[in-house]
Image 1: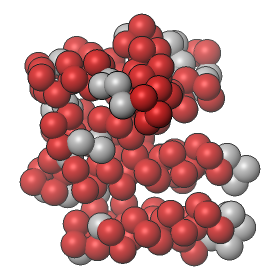
Image 2: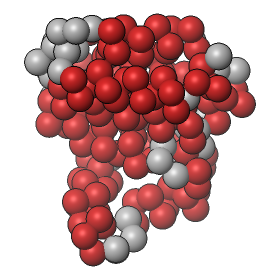
Image 3: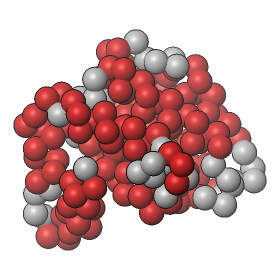
Image 4: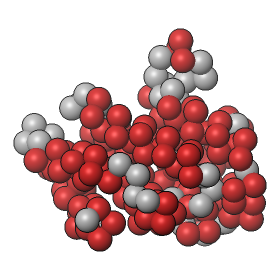
Length: 170
């Protein structure tokens, strides 16, 4: 799994400037929910904060790699259905937990979690699967938006998500 995430990271850094297709996302799009073990393992690693073993504690660098992966997966309809309904619920739980627990000085991570949440709400099967913990998602976004101790960019991202996803969160 580290190999696939590392390759995805390299593609993520190169595709914007070169136009090269991200082969990891191509495979995800082709196989979709046929990648059950991979999607379960990625969700489990995301839950552990990027650590291989829960006893190791969070790995901030791997958290960013995973955030980029989730951002890219949920940014395309062809790949956004990679996760089974229960795994998608786990991802929502992780996003809510991290948004609530992140220290205020982790703006890059918080913005990453917010962007993943935005894409998940807009592109994944979330709305067709009953809008799991919709009220908590809305409350988490409103909390970030109203927290004057957070930087303006993070607050603006939360506000934009509330606007972009108003129909999903009503």
